[in-house]
Image 1 (tube, one colour):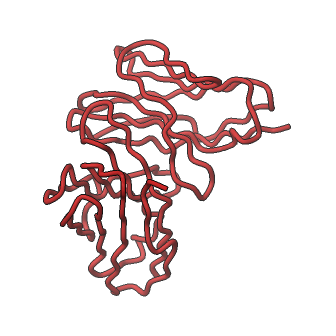
Image 2 (cartoon, rainbow over the protein chains, first blue to last red; image 1 turned 180 degrees about the vertical axis):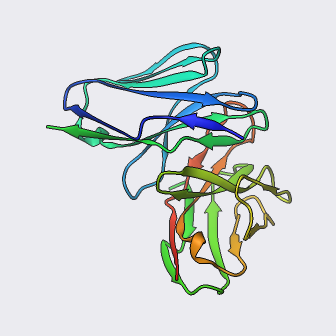
Length: 109
Length: 114
């Protein structure tokens, strides 16, 4: 089975930064994904890492260390619309995605 | 607009009834998936299909069945619903079932079994 851990909740101020950590133990590894999910809506793709290092996409960046089984999603210049749940998902050796329980980020004015 | 549609949006169902959740995509994606999402547990894979005509079991397949008669449709059937199947169900698709391929999710079906 898969074991993916991420914090349950985080709170940050508008304009600030937040970093969501994700640790994983899986049977095989074929990439790590981050999804954003607003309340009552479908998850939407944010980022993908398969090699160690940092991937940057505008205000969002994601980092991966395969040897440590660790990733983080970094959000800067936070906006109110960034209030959402952020899901860490790992693709295993069978190319199936296993999801963490999600981190609810609340952005306060 | 291309994407994934699911029906119904929500449903209240009596225990023991049969129910089929519908999922259709128009992106000509080969792979399709069904997940359930429960508070505190995250998304869990129920069944998947790597290509039309094939299906496979995910993490929590018991009580559910699927079929994949064509590329576009991937219905999920609950043969005899039980209260523990109360959940939000998401259908997803990806171009292929391979490394690096991104899954795209439908809007979800909120199912309540009483």
